[in-house]
Length: 122
Image (cartoon, rainbow, N blue to C red; front, top):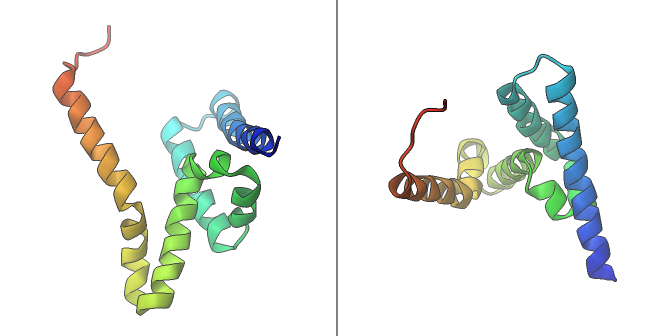
C-alpha cells in the first residue's frame, strides 16, 4: 500500500506540474521555450529558498524528474559546493551535479542521430 501511495503522489505532483505548463501554453502567449525557462528558474528559486525540498519529499519522482526538479538540483548543488569550496562552488556546483544527466542526453542524442536519418517536416 505504501508503494501505491508513493506512485500516486508522484503521479499527482508530476501531473500538476504538467497541467500548469499546459495551461500556460493554452491560455497565454508564452512560447514553450519561455515556459521551460520559467520552470527551471522557479525550481532554482524554490530550491534556494528551501521550499522545493518539501515538494520533493511529498512528490518524489513527480517533483524531481520535471524541469523544476532540474532547477532544484542546480540550486541544491550550488549551495553544497559553496559550503565546501567557497565562492568558486557557485560556478562549479551546478555543472558537477548535472554532469551525468547532461552527458547522457548528449550521448543518447548522438546515438539517435547515428541511427535515424533526420528529414524536414512536411
